[in-house]
Length: 101
Image 1: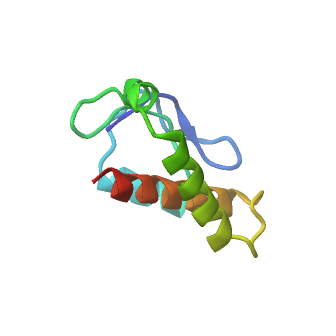
Image 2 (image 1 turned 90 degrees about the vertical axis):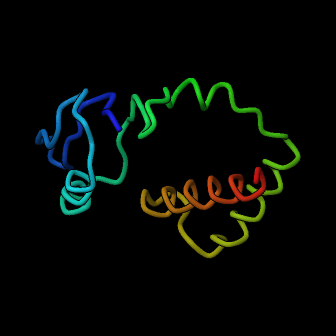
């Protein structure tokens, strides 16, 4: 994967610059420094991530059902907390992937 933007830690220190290639080692470093997300320009297979998101057509009914299921799972959590938001995002993406298969 290729980074779209610089990745910085919570204090603003540069960890990895834009257009750097990501491997498992860098992802482990991100976790160590508390980085929860990064903008990706190209995925592992060379696809443009933004174009894939824009072109993906998800049935609104399926999306609403998946969002409702995820909301139910996390109903007792602080959904404004950054970690919970990320978990919800990943959970929704997995549900939509499973439905698409």
